[in-house]
Length: 273
Image 1: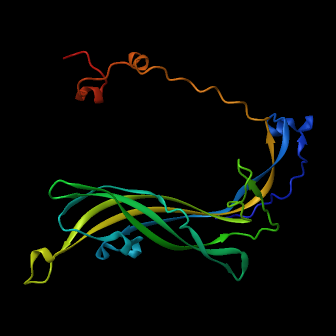
Image 2: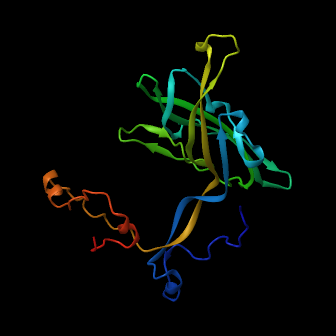
Image 3: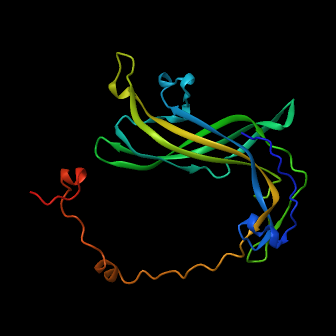
């Protein structure tokens, strides 16, 4: 969480560093003013989401999410290769920024977003249905975070290669940024038997998923900072040509043709047989 600091406006003017201050800046050649997004505050939100209501334990941060329970054909034999492929473009939105009464710069941030999950279904006849899509819709509230309002308004015009002017999309005066790391922890098929007497083909089956999510929400502002510089970045090294496939192959060592012996894990390669 944010902690107040005494760092304010720099007493050093951008330009050549005076000789008497060179040691303080690691022998940098000059002081420069850069404009960057500065993270003023951030927090981490962790949750484990399940598709079976009976497995939810809110006191242990295990929550039921109906999006993770999907109706599926009962001829399905299993779920394979479930994976989170990313945040759906355009789905991240700030719903509300509510300041607390005692400090208007500290706010509760409410936001929503969607994760796209893909999975493959294996049926009892051996066929596989690939890349089935599941959207996990989430809304969260975190805070209070230190998110002061910008004192100035920064706007830019961007011109593409064709000369067309297009509006900037990322230069918000106050930036709320979301970073998500998520993975599917488990995927199963659950069969719910129909009420007796009934036709067994009337059974209802669901694919249920367990997903672990880490959210980092950041409050940023565009600021100008004075920093020491060691000059412009040098040009990169030329890209290397990999060469012909056979040339690369002939330079490789032969692989191990047999599994390693137990002694190899304990003492390394042995000489006694």
